[in-house]
Length: 130
Image (cartoon, rainbow, N blue to C red; front, top):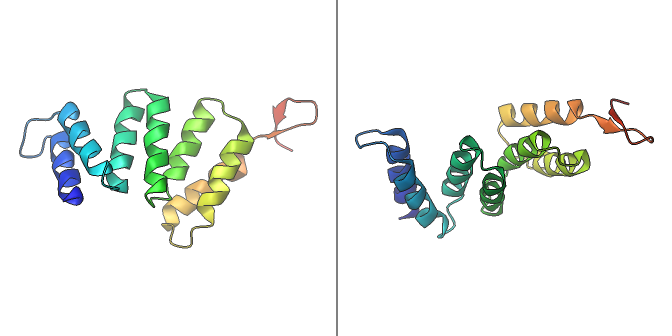
């Protein structure tokens, strides 16, 4: 039932066979997410991210993680970098994600690259690579 709602939401979000409607897609995704569908929660986060609603995007990506979609920690980390959250928070999210043995290799590579390129805080408080 939930996966059917998510599929229907995707059709409406992309205008496949139906009139494109982000509002209806969100409604369907939210209905699916209330039953624990992590993909639906991730889709909601992606819609909010595209709309520039970063806090809502982060909230829904976090729900997707809680539903077992670990790779959404990468999206959370990217939002954290963009919004200037502490690099220690970003590092923590990325390290947690990288412990997932089932992580898709392209996501793992992107997370490792982001982790490697995060500036570290120096003792003086200024950001910079050490």
